[in-house]
Image (cartoon, rainbow, N blue to C red; front, side, top):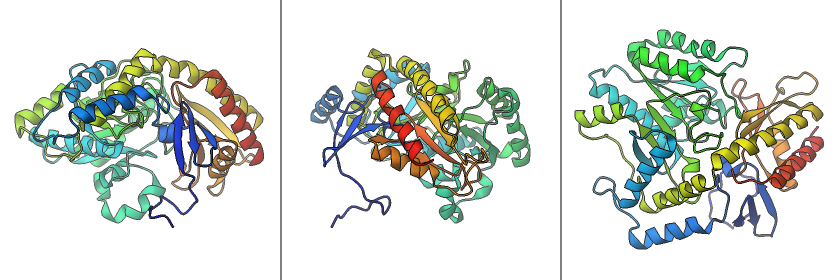
Length: 429
């Protein structure tokens, strides 16, 4: 008997080793990690230099509490990271995971307005579907019915107005203009922030708005006096072919940028928020402190992992690799779409890609969810790990498969992915 509280009742193989883009289980079976876990393992598995950096930091200084000390490694990492992201004047608030980072951004947006004397601003506008994390505040901000419904009684729904997801039929500017109607209905004087994933992840695989969307969103937010928060937990750190996905269509600078997953690439828990000089100054000149915190925030060993990962990302030019390899993979996925009627769409940016699945007879979403799980199970039987999901259409229907191998993936490994997907789609047709 195991004493582990598993995430579900399905059987779990035991992973024992990671090698590049592969995970190896206790039985010796190798799986190509076609989704980098949950779009986390950006640099691949088994990088000894990251483990060495963590060990060296643990020997020197394993822990200090953020209310009492900074650390040399945190100071260096914040400066390096903000430079990499093109946000040199921003301040980095380090935490342990994407949910904590989005919770922090939500609280920071609220405190920012209170410090400015606008305490009536508390609402956070988000989109449907979307996913910002599993903690209660981040989940309330999410528009993902299946994960949210059980806990709805714990949320003040009025505090979380929802905007429709990006519409490919609209221009980016017209799509973004729909935010104005949501603001008007919510009462713009009561809204603190708008938060969105520049390229959607788990809730609607790799959906992205048209060119000009984020620039217009930023303009609308400025006009309304609210903060624009880019949730780059999944899309950032080069995964979409650029340090920040919000800038794929042009120079856009959000007030807050939420980061995670690829920061330490799975080698340690690390995430955070990059805050604009205006937000930081307002909070520090007001109360003198951000009224929020986590015990392991800025943990030196995690930050050392992040610094080593950043070395690799920059040295190996992984954002550029993601752009190049992502185009190759997307071309292959579109070929699969042409051969398999159940693939309704192949889309994405860089190595954040998705397959929209549905009923081949109607070309629409299946009447009930389950197709994505069946395709993922078939792919797994052929040694390929993917990230299935559903609910993008109405909270229940709308199957999709999220794909995102490590940014270091080779051409031959992409071919292996596509072959396994081809077989999986054939077997579930």
